[in-house]
Image (tube, rainbow, N blue to C red; front, top):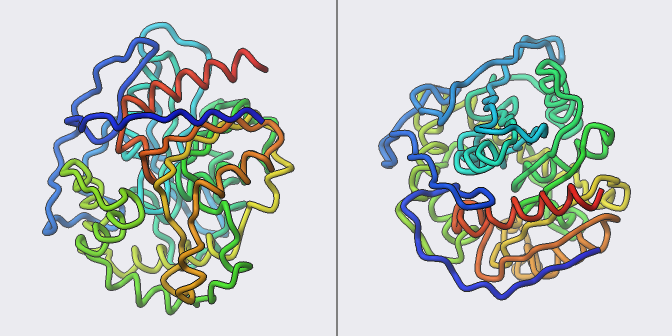
Length: 354
């Protein structure tokens, strides 16, 4: 295990919320024009929200139902390096949230695939679906095969980190490099003593979701109490679906996937990951799903990323840990220039080490 723990000074706020870089840092593309106000509404498949690149659709059948997975397939800019990067979003995020990462990797010669998982964002919202990480991994694998991709660098953030780890375990021959960006699931909350909540209970809570509740949660757990106006765009993206015509099905799928991530830990299988793995972790993160249900004494011990990230790096055989001491749950949003410079440097290093 290689561990890098630089003491990095915070970067000044950038005009954009999410991307930059290249071996010589390229200027980020301007974000798509989208309202970021509490009153914004979007359709159940995020109709009305503008993605940074054309959205394509992978049509397939899963669990005897027709499914439509939205995705962006962005070609490399300039000289292609022959590699593909697959970006897996978190539970409170979408493929669009990777906007600056797509720009960065594409500018560095990568082909970039950024899907919205079934049940999320611009993809199908099924009423009856058995959500599981193996199922979402199988859906993603089918998408990649349909695009002729046999091997890729898989990058997952937040819940997408849990999915990326499951994908690497399920399809090891398809993963040339695994990158986990502040993944949740570095601990087993249920085993730690967090009480279980049924999908029906979670659904009732999801129905109460508003712009302000999302912002308050992210302010507390994601950004260490420090908010920037550019974060509002991503809050609006999520809150707009709860405020729109598909409110009930959006809340239902969110409840189902909340139960999924709580009951399907992957942390116990970290020793079986064979791919070279890069952990990029903001140490200020305190994300711990279900902590609001836990006894106060337990809740204070959950989501301790400075400890959890080191445990994860020790458990994964070919892990390289890079920590950002002053950043939180979404380092690619908080400090895009620093994050993407580090990402490209470590991806290049991972290529040389194989």
